[in-house]
Amino acid sequence: MAAVTDKNSRRPSRAPFIGRLLPVFLLLGPVFPAALALPAPETSTAAQVDIRALDDKGIYWYERLRFDLASQAFSRILLLDPTNASALRWQGLINLANGDVQAATVWLGKLRSLHGQSAYTTELQQAISLASEKRQQLAELRYQASSEKVPGDLPQRLLKLLPQAPLGEAAQQIYRLMKSTPEGAALARSQVSRLAANFPEDRRYRSLLAELGGAAVADRSAAPRAAAS
Image 1 (cartoon, one colour):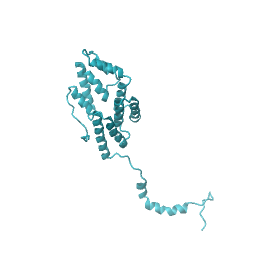
Image 2 (tube, rainbow, N blue to C red):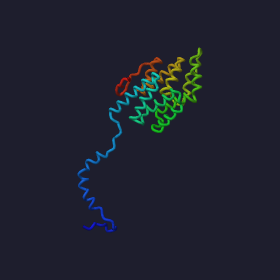
Image 3 (cartoon, rainbow, N blue to C red):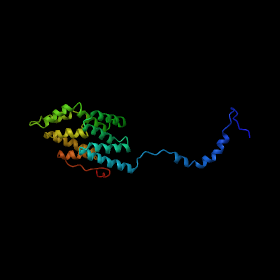
Image 4 (cartoon, rainbow, N blue to C red):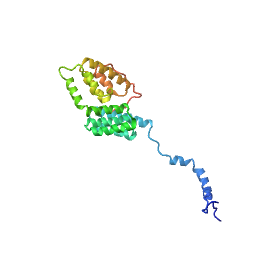
């Protein structure tokens, strides 16, 4: 049987071959999409629960100065969700706690590239600033806060260390020193109370508010967190 050729080409036409395969495609068509589909990113409820539990565990170890175990927990979060802003922030803070400002700056760069100037980015940026270029000024103010005669303008000088209102670790350092004067303590309580209301899942602010003698703020977390073990 002579091969069928295209009118504009001497090569044999593929029409008979495609015609023979067409019934096969029609039969297996519903199967192919399922077989070839790529696995979807893990965004299940179970994964979200795992992230919340790991976040609690990381904070638990961070507060107990076990930065190695804290870093392991946050690293596991980033395996589940590589863009998790909270975990990226904590990894940078762990580097700072270990005295590695350069490594913390790398995490800050990742945060900026993924989330812009978010609250997490600002917190890590402020912590890096207090650990590097503002370190000497903060040390001098800390010394004055513990002296017998505390300067009356100490709270204002502490707040001028940063261009924005302090968040997270910076807030803990600055507002604790501000309680050295009655006016500073009142201002610190007001600011931390606002932070506790704006970030209800961050228990650092509730603990700091209690330390400053402020009224307790209810935990408005969407769901109870798993206990760290």
